[in-house]
Length: 372
Length: 258
Image (cartoon, rainbow over all chains, first blue to last red; front, side, top):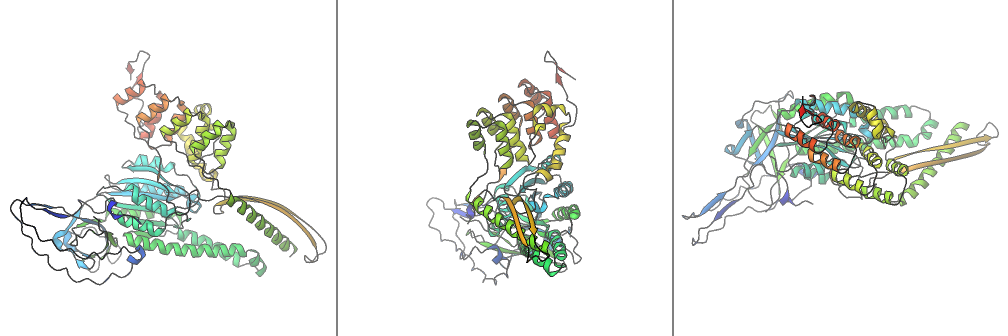
C-alpha cells in the first residue's frame, strides 16, 4: 500500500491547510470542527460502482474570533480534472466556459465560484508493449507515435517507455519530435509483459510535481505475465498521480487471429480435432484471457478518465493515435477548490456534468485527498 | 491412420521431453547477466569469444551508462565485449560489423544502424518463437514395420526435445525499477574519451542514447580542446538534429577555419 502523504502532484497547485497562528497572549481559540474522517481506501474496482448516497451536509463551523495580531494563513487547494466533452453524435465539444460545468464531489455540488478552466499543456507518456504480441508491428507503432507527436501542441511533452520483461524509459520528457523519433528506433522486442509494473512505475516515477495534465497512452493486449505488481496497485498509483490512461488495445486483432485459427482447426475431422486438442484448448484459453483483459482495460480507462480503443488492424494505429491526440487537444482542465478540506488520505469521488444535457462528460472517478 | 498414430506417439514423447527439461530448468536459477558477472568472467580468464557468446545467449540486465562503461573498461573488459553488451542491450546480434574497422569502413553509420534496427524484429532474442516464454526444438525419427493396421504394427519412435525455459528475471511480486537509458552530455563524451574508448564505440553510444548536447561554438571549442574528434562531433550534431555542416574545423595551428 502506498502512503498518500508522498504522492507526487496529488493536488494541482499548492497544498491546502487553513492554519491560524494565535498572536502571543491571545486567548485560547475554539477548535474548528473537522468532518469525520470515514474515508476508506477502497480498491479501484470498488470505486467504479455506484457512488455512496450523499452524506448529510456538514454542520456550519463555529465562527472563530480573530484577534488583532493573529496571523491567518490560508493555503489554497485545487483539484484539476481533465474533462472530455462529447455531443450526442460523439463529436468533441471544445468551446465551453466555466458556467457550462457542474462539479460534484462525493455528491456535493461544488460552488461555481470555485471552478476555473485553464489552458494546461499535457505530459504524455507513450508506452509500448514489446512482447511477442506486438513485436511484429513495432513499425506501425513508430509511425503512429510520430503522427501523435505531430498533433500535440508545442508546449506538450512526451516521454517513451517500453515494457517486456523490464520497464525501460527510452526517452525522458522532451518537446523535441526529433528526439522522440530517435528514441523510437531504440525500441526492440523482448519477452514477457510487465504491464502492471510499467503502469505503476510510470505513475510513480515519471510525474513529479508539474501542473500539467497527465496522460499515458499505451499499446498493449493488457495480459500481464504476472510475478510483478497487481493491476489494482497500478490503477491506484495512477489515480493517486492523477494520470489519465488511454489504452490502444490489440485484443481485437489478436482475437480475430485466434478465431481464424480456431475455425480452421475445428473444421477438421474428429480425429484431426483430437490430434489438435492441445492447440484448440490453448486458443480457447487465449480467447478467454483476451476477454478478461479487455474488461480490465475498460475498467482501468474508465476509472482514470481515459478511453479504450480497439483497432481492428495494426494499419489503423495511426488513425487511433491521431484520435487520442485530438481528444487531448480538446480536453478541458477544470480546476476547483474542494469544500471538503479534510486531509485524511481518503478517496473523493468526483462527477462532472455539463449544463447542456445532450453533452456527455468524461473524467476520472475521483482523487485521493492528501494526508497530513 | 497409421501416420496419425505415429504422430501422436511422437507428440507424447516430445511432451514428455518438454516436461523433463522444464523441470530441470526450473531448478536452475540463472539470474540475468549483469556488468559484475561480465567482469567476473573476464577475471576468470574466459576467452573474449566465449564471453560474447554467453552475452548473446543469456537474459541480461546491463548498466551501460557512461560511468559504468568506464568502470568496465577499467576492470579489464575489452571494448569488443562492451560492444557486444551494447548490442545485446539494443537487441541486435553482435557480429564483426560492430568492430571499429568494419564500422568505419562502411561509411554511412546511420544507415547501418537503421538496417540493423529493421532486422531486429527477426533476430532479437525472444522473437524467434511464438511459444510464450520458451523456445526450443525437437528432432525425432519414426520407423515402423508390420501390417497395414497401425494397431497391429510394431512402431519404434525415438525423439528428443530441447526446450529453453525463460522466466521473468525478478521474483514474484517484486516491482522492478524503471530502467532509464542514460542521457549523454558533452561531459559524458569527454569522460569516455579520457577513459580511452575508441571513436567507434563512442559513436555507437551516441547513436543509441538520448542526448542533451550543447553544441554552441564555445562548447564545440571546449570539446575539441578535450580531443573530441570531428567524427564524434559530427555524430553529436546528427544526434541533436543539427544537419548543418561542421561550422568550424580546427587547422593545424588551432585557428578555426570556415
